[in-house]
Image (tube, rainbow, N blue to C red; front, side, top):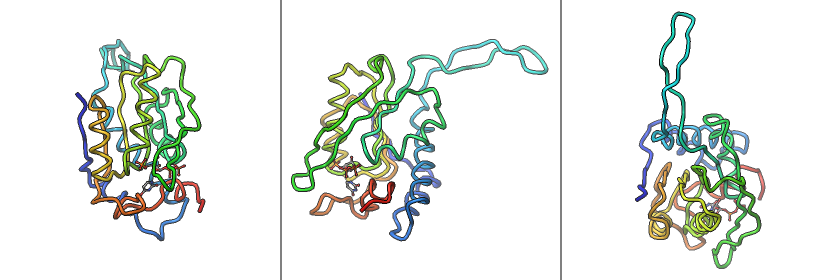
Length: 209
Ligand code: PRP
Ligand code: URA
């Protein structure tokens, strides 16, 4: 059974509320998304397995620890999810990377799939699916379903902001998946934007509009 983890670290809170400000520009927005992703990755990897390893320090031999168990993959949901990848790779540089392309139809708010390329052994990996925004939950739920159809069994979803409606949907559709949320916002508006939110994450990361 998966669990929902809402971040409660002051650094994460400070950085999220900083980038909500409309005057924060693309460069700074992108850099801070990377930092938040790194901090969230630290939390989300707390359960990784360790194994004993014999090492030698300049002083003596000792039994140390190294990461063991399933290898990792990171799967960003295009496009905004790309903004979270670098931060996660700084923590787990050996992770393989897959991509799922989904965009939200502006009228219906339904996710439309346009791309999927995954590591060939992703069914054996622990997969971190990343997207900064969980609004209706349509995109992330669809992405997790696509991954399950490819045989992926072990998944964790990381988002920076979530609306309660989207979080509820993701829990219902994928109760087996652990979910890490940077901050849980109040609601969605009539256009499907998170309130108070930070606007369109993809546009702010890539400087489009
Ligand atoms: C945004 C965001 C999520 C989705 C969240 O992507 O990055 O993927 O919306 O909304 P939902 O929970 O209601 O599905 P968008 O469709 O704007 O595409 P983009 O990343 O290419 O900007
Ligand atoms: N996607 C975004 O980028 N922002 C929102 O507030 C909702 C969906």
